[in-house]
Image 1 (cartoon, rainbow, N blue to C red):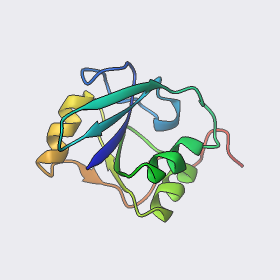
Image 2 (spheres, rainbow, N blue to C red; image 1 turned 90 degrees about the horizontal axis):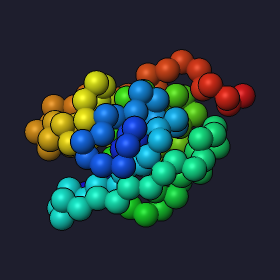
Image 3 (tube, helix red, strand yellow; image 1 turned 120 degrees about the horizontal axis):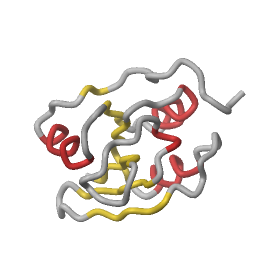
Length: 117
């Protein structure tokens, strides 16, 4: 399974970003091969085009520190699972995901998107 994670730096020891859309980096982690790829978040905006791109690339789960309603809606429409992981590293969150210890979100954790009307 491919998992998408917003982080503060470009490695698995990085903290999960407090707000998904404002992460400095995005990691795509493959749970089968244990490989990951990091890329800087160049978007830093409310369009969230990265979400539909990742859905198209076969990402099945997102791990977030927080997520607004617009991003959550995009993922929900794509039937993507969104898990909450606060105050932990990407590696800790992935271990908890593997052990079914992360909370599966049924709604956004933030009531209003920062820049989206």
